[in-house]
Image (cartoon, rainbow, N blue to C red; front, side, top):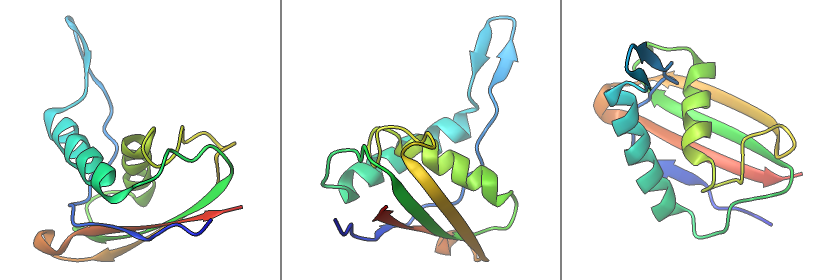
Length: 117
């Protein structure tokens, strides 16, 4: 199947680590807010059921150069679980690549291409 390219006008976000307090663990609010926005945009852009077979994912992103590309990918993959694919385990996503271009915050975006393997 040929999937459409997904374009998300969304700032970049690195995968956050849980914060631990004496009351339990939580994810930082900016990460929670970003993930919620990303999920909403993905649901609007993706008319299919989550993919449950091997695929290749290519991500092109632009935004402030403040993080590591592997952490950008991790944040996106977590948000896309159960929307684009059933899970981001390696039996589903067999191949993944990411490229980053520095851009102003207002010009941030994600472009995602998915191919069946």
